Length: 151
Image 1 (cartoon, rainbow, N blue to C red):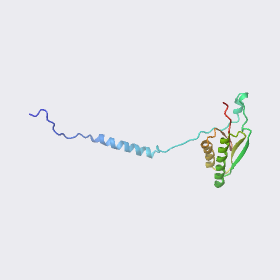
Image 2 (cartoon, rainbow, N blue to C red):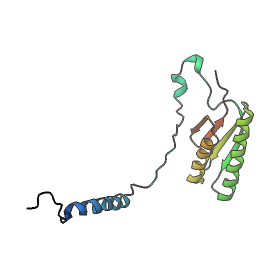
Image 3 (cartoon, rainbow, N blue to C red):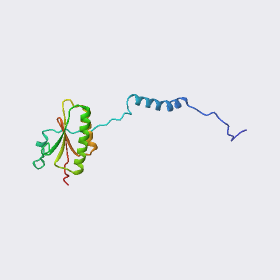
Image 4 (tube, helix red, strand yellow):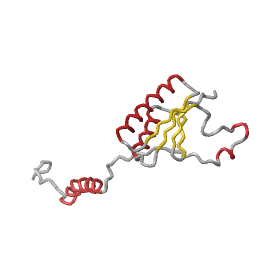
């Protein structure tokens, strides 16, 4: 009589469990890939000026819009080569304006009737990458200025 002997036994495999362990992750990845779950989407915070805003502010906090500055006009008209060079010029001017903390100068982007959407997005991107804290979009313009901190 064998009381405590270890006899080799056949390993227990559960076929539906193995199939689900292998196939479900693969099917999930395929499903997510088909429904474009892995695409990266970006957005830009954008505030458009409303002409009724100055009336809603108290009298001691009223400011004029656009701010009283001498502006460098950047007229974007739809020609890709000239628009690229003008955007590079505006990037350099914004960079120098912010480095020198010039409160008398501003940059005004003007978008003509035939300007393309990529120029608008690049102008906004310039404002973000150069870390211009005070800029405002209004109608066909984007105004970029340096405002001295109040504290």
